[in-house]
Image (tube, one colour):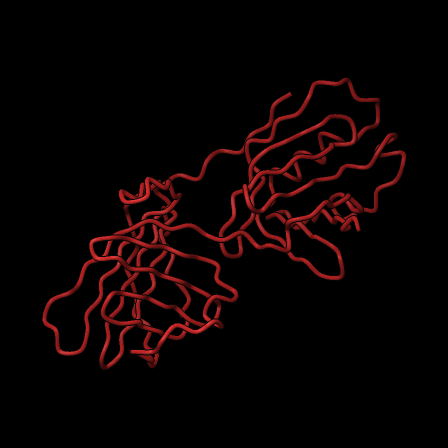
Length: 252
């Protein structure tokens, strides 16, 4: 049996963009607190630049200056996985577009999952500086663990649901891969992670015959439909649009 999610489609079409204004702090040196809580990074060459986004700030480092601005919520395209950050101040105009399109860094030959386009206008400059590069989201490190199922679609499971072992997943956030057990078969697959979004995709299982009454199919369907998650009190809660969560307990 093979179960797989459709891949997220990419497009260059965007919706009409609004502008949010916030005070910018420029010409600051890098300090260590900017590296904490980073959920997206990108870089490019000619000239070299680096972008870091956290819940608190957006940092753009160029050879001439480092620009630090408060975080602003991205504008999301309605028909594609495209996010735009628009920051205008009295001294700086910064427009960032992140597209879910595979990107190859020509200098390092590193393959990334996102293409990044930046428009930067400084001070009294009449022209925009155009920066192009590649980036990736950084998967939440708290997911990196072994989790055993406690609740399926909002109901506590017991031995009548899974006669052998309870389902479990082991998540590797460094590779964005997972392995696990469905209650009957072994499984593996890939993670799709963005800020506030989690999907279990390309799920494959072995083909052992399951005992009657096993809820393996129900478990796999729920896992495949996951879109968001929360972590608290050693519990991982996977949610979907139906509002029927999967609850896992962390294995110590």
